[in-house]
Amino acid sequence: MTSTGERADQFPAIEKKHGKPMSHWFSMLKKLGDAKYADQMALLQEQGFSRAHANTVVMHHRGSASSRRHDSVDDLLDSLPAEHADLMRRIFATIMKKNPRLELVVAWNQPMLKLGKEYVIGVSASKKHLTIGPWGDEPIEVFASELAGYESNKKTFKVPLDWKIDAALLNGLVRYRLDEIT
Image 1: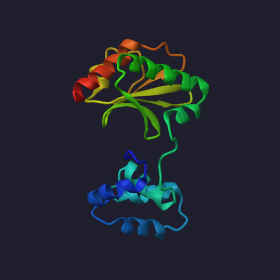
Image 2: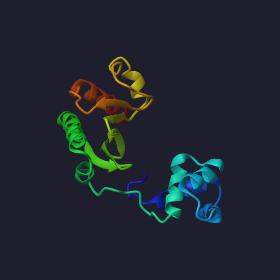
Image 3: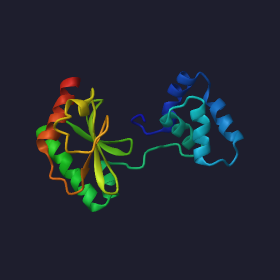
């Protein structure tokens, strides 16, 4: 999603990628009548849409012009259970202590640190853990030995809510990303 959070900001990219005006896609959805969200998504994905682009079109068609749910990081964190918000605040404080030029923002309805226009690292909350997503050229692979004790995939790793923050790991991931973009 673009920085304004408006779904319509994505329309030019969707039109360019799929070669048809938005009116075409909205017309297809309209023909489905009162179809469920999943059916609308399936229709667009059958046309080659990514899940993200399909969601943008379907949600706009359903009347949701903006994907923004939180006006600020504090608003977002205040919406989380206290245990989740506390750990997130401590994670970001640990990183920002060593990297004060980073900006804490809301992007994709998640708290993220960025430098200028470049994202550095983000955190999302789940019921029993937080997921940390470092940006960059395969940081999970580069830091595989440091992440050996964590559940991870290609782009993220999970930490329990009682995690004793590993400042060296977090700051290493951030340094790796900053070296890429500066």
